[in-house]
Picture 1 (spheres, helix red, strand yellow):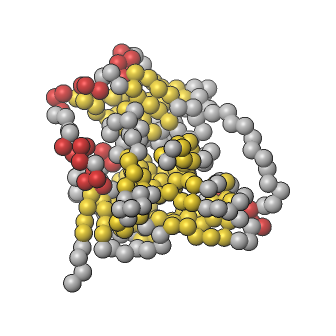
Picture 2 (spheres, rainbow, N blue to C red):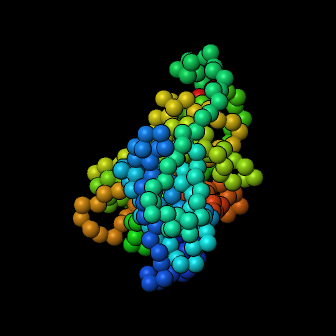
Picture 3 (spheres, rainbow, N blue to C red):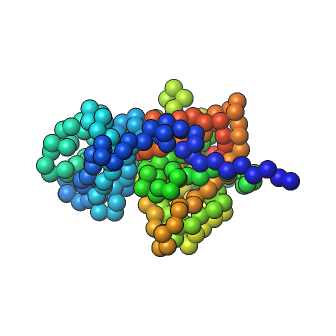
Length: 290
């Protein structure tokens, strides 16, 4: 008889579960994020306490709200979004600011060298990662019964290549169970520094939406983004929005394989939390063109 093992993502981070603060000792962080030049609201901005498991992302109108513990008052908030400069502010200063409006500036990036060879002329391709979708061991994305605490959480894998002039063609991930009508993920590609996710490689936001309780493989076409990668890089999925018509305990489960001596998986519970390296391999893979 097959052994079925079910774990929750937060099981890997026990201090998050057992270190919860009571509601009467919490403070509400609430406001709106806009672009500095035109005051237009910015959707899906990652917002959180730096290196802490408290945070969220802004909604489609730029609004955000989440609670923090009173002893976080001396910590720092960070706001980040692809294509914009990150912004930091002390929590005490944010709470004392009556407007509660955060303005992000567009990031000016230097133009990269343009390849004469077009992407569709690259005839060679290679798949990197796990194409397995076995369900012997599975992991829940959610913290107990809370969807709010899932917003902003992120998980992904390291990929390695020795190919030159390489471009990402697609990214694929597998979900084995899902009771949401709609889930929206942000796909983030990071460079590595000292073995940790560092700067975002993608210059534009990459969003994908799962509808009607979709399970199985989801393929994200990355060719339009012309993302160049070298040696090592990380691709993650970040939960940014969801809709559940019938209120029930959230179910979003992904399969994984245990790899105790090879820690290529990274997770973080909130959008500005510390990255944690885990000995498991998610059912994720990429296709590269060279």
